Image 1 (cartoon, one colour):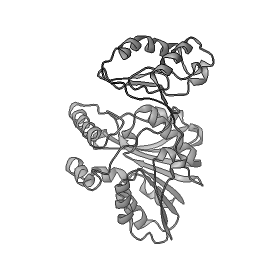
Image 2: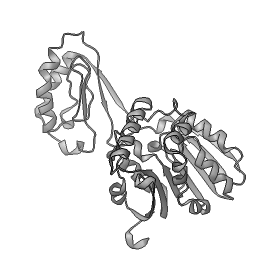
Image 3: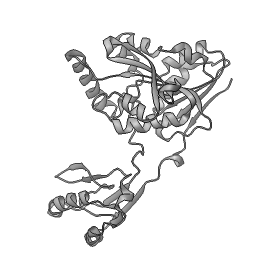
Image 4: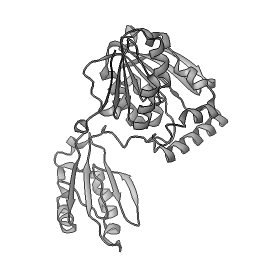
Length: 326
């Protein structure tokens, strides 16, 4: 079977609108703050405000990033809460003594991708780091429900990393198609080299952020190994909903991941691990979260679970649909 490799085009990324405005324009536009028309239309947007100056600060607020000076977009984009934020920070922003910078306003939808984690730096040493801390036990967890994946016709591996699970899968899989979505260029190259000859299995490598991936066909199985733990709950929910969109009716999603530690030493270990990857790979989350509630909200039902490392790692087999349909 053929092996394809492609980079997902930038044209599918959510559009971003950027405006550069003068200080005078910013001041004049403040007059529109009193108009609260069409406020409800904007509840689906993430709202951020940032002042790039000596009083550096980042807050949740309506739908904009501010650099140095406050400048609102048209009044329909604002809520009462945002007006309070502007009122509080307007004076400090005006009295900054540093030279004014250009101000940039950027809008994006709620579930638009954040900057992806950057694993290129640790891609080559990642297996050694993992085995230094956990031995081979995470590899054992990756093999959960392995026989079922072997039998699936169309399999999607999300955030596969350097291809250790992929190599094991295609070594025993006799037919079907496996697609691999990975955002790290170095990880993707390592996975491709590790996979080698795929035999009768069709292999498709897609270098992309999973959140903007748009396949042409649905999958029978989606597999995520130590992927969701990189994200905070809102991003987890968006990813889980995306998985549900890509899986056929009665399809299966297998997720293997860390869960919140319940005792002292595992908690310390997880804190150190997250601190390391926050610095080196710029992951989004500061700690791990249990995805079960988000999965249920997205229409997934847990069919089976297997615990590893004393319950610190859990493999879950989800089925798409209601409880009575499992």
